[in-house]
Each structure stands twice: as structure tokens, then as C-alpha cells.
Length: 170
Image (cartoon, rainbow, N blue to C red):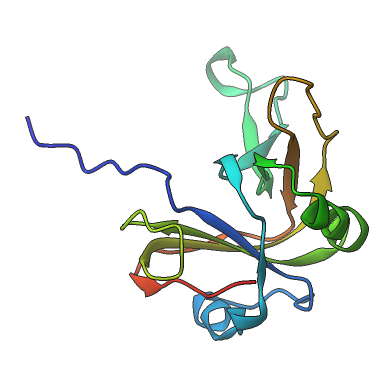
């Protein structure tokens, strides 16, 4: 049996550009976006990358072959990215009052070296347009404060698996 090539999620970051409001056409266009001025969601505990669903339209009729229903594919739904982050008061204010509900560019960087700073390389970048929704912040008396978030994807995600230097983000 071959050794696993699985990697941990440590070092994964979510960057956003609230100034980018139009969808780049392809991977090359996404790479040309200046991510130097991007911001990041700090102290992410966990994230779930967006999936993709296709709507099925029932086109069954009285002469459908072999007595089976028939379906045709329709629109695709690029899904949502969801996660939880530690609640940092200054960032929560920015996300809640500036970014929440605003369509902007998003970039997920997964870091193969596991570096949580800008010194590593990303082994996968996922780019998409989307808008952020914040859930209710949790303020337990005996635990850490956290806030769930969802980013509804508004465009087809573009995945780049080429190794790239991590972006320095504020």
C-alpha cells in the first residue's frame, strides 16, 4: 500500500479584496489581481470549501423509455464556503459593518509547508467571487469566543494547484 499524501489544513488562509467587484475571466486573470492589498479573516478554526450542485429538471413523459423517469441537467450552484473563526473584536466590527453582504473577490490559500505566516508556499489556491454572512457570535462564560461565517459563492470557483508564494495580507 502506498504512503498517504494527505495534508493537514494548518496554515490555510482566507483572503478577500473588497475593492474587486467584477469577476476575472480565467485563472490568468485571477492571478493578475493584486492580492497585496488584500485582507484576511484572522484566526480561522475550521473551514469547509464550497462544493457544487447541479439542478435536475424532470422531463419524464408518458413514453419515457423502460418505465424510468428522465432528467436533464440545468443550472449549477457553486455552493458556499463555511467556517468558524475566533472572535476578534476589531475584525468582527470590520466584517460585520464593511464586508458582510458585499460582493468581493475571495482567495483560499492552502499551505503545504504548514506555515501560518507569509514564509511558506501555497500548494492550492481557490479563487471566487462571493458575499459574506456572519452568524451569531458565541460568547460562552467558560470558553473561547467565536463567530461562524458563510461565504456564498457567486461565480464558478477557479482552482490553481501550482505552487505559489503566499500573499502578504493585512
